[in-house]
Length: 348
Image 1 (tube, rainbow, N blue to C red):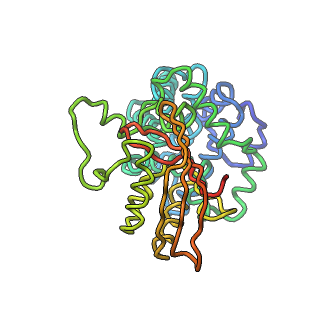
Image 2 (cartoon, rainbow, N blue to C red; image 1 turned 45 degrees about the vertical axis):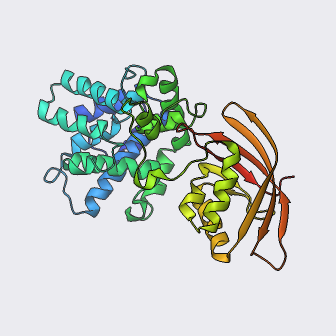
């Protein structure tokens, strides 16, 4: 099999050997970087292992040639010739469909390959499709995120990685998606996988999230139910709400005063990052019966960012009150409310 990679690799992996699989391998090896090509072939090997683990038989329960082609071309949208104006998954599916059509593959099989490629990042949708689509996503998910790796035959992953090195796949692939999206933002629409990746690499608020889209819809919808909790309309109100929520033992209210990736220092030397860790620390404060008094000391307010310092007195967590001077960085959110980016009562 002439593929742009050593023939021995394909013989050792016992890959399906047909004119179509040879052409697809050669095309992917030529059009994509080594980390993409290696990933694509490994995805097939892992998909085939999942099939065997489920008792599925090649040729009877799934089309092995089509599974291989779908896996080896699933990231062809990241190639130069596959880089259109759509999400890379859809561009890849369209590019693969042209490739298959040029080789006389019938439209029914092309449609299956299109689904497998276009839906490979769509959890909850791909699994409702045919065997080839389900298996392709399973193999790809194993190679990217380690999903179901525990069900692989012992030693298989090590053998495959020795033949086809990872080359820091996860981050290299992320960079490739970002490179396309930064040049063509329409390839990363909000609420998609490429969109979420792009959002994390743009200035805060530059790429809309779900609530930003609702606010911009123009229908005037207002928060109800769980989303209707009071928000801090000014930086100074964050302290007021914090004291109120703590006294009411309202853990979700307290957590709502922090960005998802905020930094929090509940005790000297303890540095927490993210909602889960912050929720646990705040719940411990509630469970201890803590009470907090915050008095504004200084504030510097510039646009959507504010630097705040409060005189803090924490009681109920020890025999003596804990007195500190806080350092807090707050940021105005798309809905107008203010929350913590950094909350450090001990920084000063």
